[in-house]
Amino acid sequence: MLNFFLKFLTNLRSELLAVFRYYQELIYPLLFLILAIILFPLSVSTDPILLKKISAGIYWVVVLFLVLLMLDQLFQNDWKEGDLEQLILLPNELGLVLFVKLLVFCLVICVSLFIVTPILSLSLFIPLIALKTLYLSILLGTPTLIFLGGIARALTLGLRQSGLLIILIITPFYIPVLIFASSAVALASLGLPANGPIAWLGVLMILSMSLAPLVISKILRLGIAFA
Amino acid sequence: MKSVLTVEDLSFERNNRILFKQLTFQLFPTQILHIVGANGSGKTTLLQILTGLRIPLSGKVMWNGIAIKKNNINFTDNLLYVNHRLGMKSALSPTENLYLCLARRNLIHKQTKRKAIHTIHQILDQLDLKDCSDTLLTQLSAGQQRRLSLAKLLLIKADCWILDEPFTSLDSAGIAFLSFLMEKQSARGGIIVFSSHQAMYSLPLEIKKIFLDAKVC
Image (cartoon, rainbow over all chains, first blue to last red; front, side, top):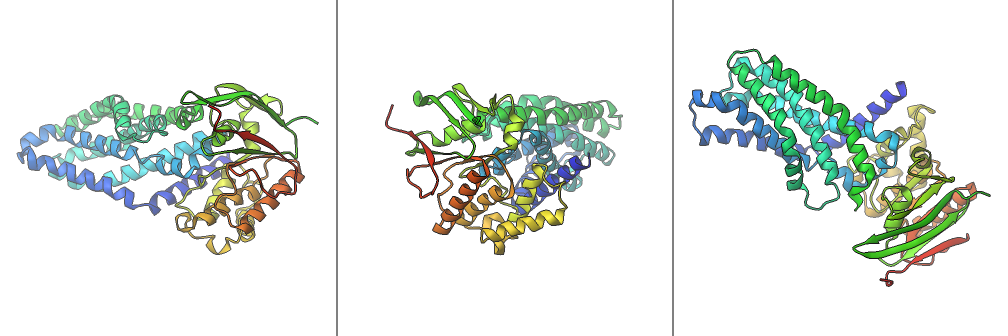
């Protein structure tokens, strides 16, 4: 057990180091998020009543696009450097390391979303009472998006132009998350309890976080990526 | 003596062209196999099949008499695969990478962290990489990165080495060092499969050869 934790921590430390040493790659998506959200008040209307009605949907659609954009980078460096190949050859470790890699990816996106959300929610007129629910929906929703996206990423790893294909494969599976998350925020901004959708987001998160690494390791070990 | 690595009736095609067909061989402890072939003749593919990364069209690869698909963990614990890719994280330093490598193979708990780091430094010293032990891999030259990929051969004891073009972009000292490592591995009773497009390397050992000819279509 101790050994397992030691391994987990060593892997986590190296993944975090690898991510933060390439921190430039993390800033672009964040800027994309800010720009894309600011476009809506500029182009649709600055009318608070109208924006309040559609802001939850807008916010979550933009978050979804952000995750889709970022997915192309997931496993990209590991694949190019051959780190993933070496991991496939260690079948005992593959699931754990994939989990750590996806977790780090989640952390990066969640933390950056947490930082910019207060400012962006102001520009979309999301009321302050809904902010807590918005944070909860990000915390529970984005891991599902990323862990599911990892499956699509693993399927398209060997292809040269995979960006658009990943989006086509995975977007249909994102619809439940999108519905629950945006309805939670919409309910909260009307002052209603949003426990139901939030609970569903939690269920989806637990399912995807526990099962996706296993699915991904099976896919990788099938050897599709080498064809 | 029992053969450790047995290949039976292996075949593979790419774009409707047969790369190899009914390939059968056995490797016994201490033996070295050299796969020779022109570019595109399927050397890398063959080696990937031997490691189990790629699945052959027909036939099977066996380790100690059991197919590697069924006996995956036992085989991969004894396998070191080095190819043209780095096999490490370029955002980390050589020391961090090799430590991660040990941790992933469950070799840390036998020794303390300080001792493991000490061993890693000794190995980097042997490879003339001591000065770069804390530089990030992206800042190392191609030759230095190749040398570093050899560090794994020193760090981890494995009975089966599969090396894909190990001699490329190494200087003469590096080639001599790798040859020395291969002799030692063979003397220890391990087996080596390696590929290159040149047929000749001055190893003072007996080497089996397989020629993959690209011209047979």
